[in-house]
Length: 201
Ligand code: AP5
Image (cartoon, rainbow, N blue to C red):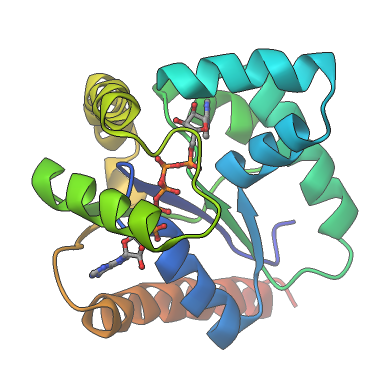
């Protein structure tokens, strides 16, 4: 794992994490693992565990890290042999999630934090919900407010702990302008990885 980048994608609900991840995948071919998507897949399976997860997600709270980390760990193990890099989208959402990820899986090389105002995030989610044929259960005003509160309660501690490897990006701009900054940061990580690999030869 030391030879490929691991990048955490942080930011509140609707800030544009998934949008930027899609562009990163297109340019770099990285493996995109969204904690929310992994959980929604589990819910869609109709299992008992899925029903419990759905209740937590509908409340806007956080699922237990044992569940999330185990889903991420399995997905990383499946992709590891062929992956060019991992985008871990929507994780960590609590300081301890980051600590456990790095202890059990590998250190993250970079965290990209997409900073966005609450008003913009709510507007973006409501617009997404209005435009989508399949509306997410948690994309309603009440749950969005709860998701924002959960985000606010946990994010400063994450940003403080991982300050040395976090880049904060103003996400209130055009998608392509944001992406230019994302590319600079990822290119820098890739260059450092190549230099480290060369130094070990
Ligand atoms: P999750 O699925 O991760 O949802 P989220 O964080 O609330 O984020 P979204 O997926 O809603 O938004 P996004 O930031 O990806 O924005 P997008 O690119 O779609 O989590 C859901 C739930 O799962 C959580 O509440 C929790 O219960 C549980 N969970 C997940 N991870 C967990 C964890 N680690 N631990 C415990 N529980 C966990 O963009 C939104 C809209 O805006 C789109 O329509 C897009 O086109 C538009 N847009 C994007 N960028 C721009 C821009 N620059 N300008 C204009 N419009 C834009």
